[in-house]
Image (cartoon, rainbow, N blue to C red; front, side, top):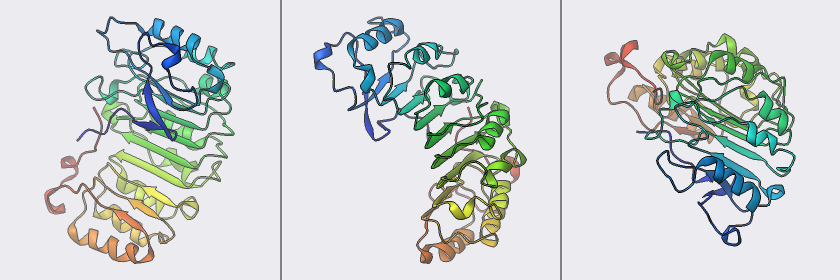
Length: 315
């Protein structure tokens, strides 16, 4: 199962591929779609530079709300610079959402999609409300804060530990949803529970309502930390999906602080026994918590040694 797909909607808007050589009069209103930029490497109809220049000349920049960048802006060979987007910031006054790296598996492995230091981009767009990132190589988030960002999603096969640490420590007072795919240390990951300590303590993110710490080999350790984390009571949903969660981690969740205030607990793609699944449902579903336990690996825990478990997305 692939977890990297082209987005069909973004920021509540339908994704619209900016077409080659389209009549400007035939384009949708600038604020009605999330504009996607995608050019195949062997498509000779129009290269990326020409596409970008034509977009800036044919669409009302002041009304654009959301943008999605695929190949070759981001690809397995480093992609293109963010400079063109940053230079356009004075015209993109309504921009609220960016998706960087909208590539599928057939275009580039998620571990090879190159990102960069996001500080200049966030500084250029102080009113940005949603930022989605796919890829982790080269990624960093060395910003002290951003006042208006509400949604931050990082899909990675290996999230650099320093980037995760910077995200955990950043002051993001408006942030409501945070989703981090931590990934595999063999593909650039390796974040520790200790590096996420400010996040567990609820520091700098008073509006946070959804927390996803996903796609890692330390799901059990994360579950233990969340069992006593200060941030948990303010959440309405929590995700520990896509990783190597075992009965030990689920036991830590059950024995930790109450989770009955949650609307949803997403543990999908897991290594739990049938008995533990039943315990989770029995403890939480009657309280109104939707417990997602789909994608269970077909064996019992005695057959899963630590080396036999794996995460959903790494390469």
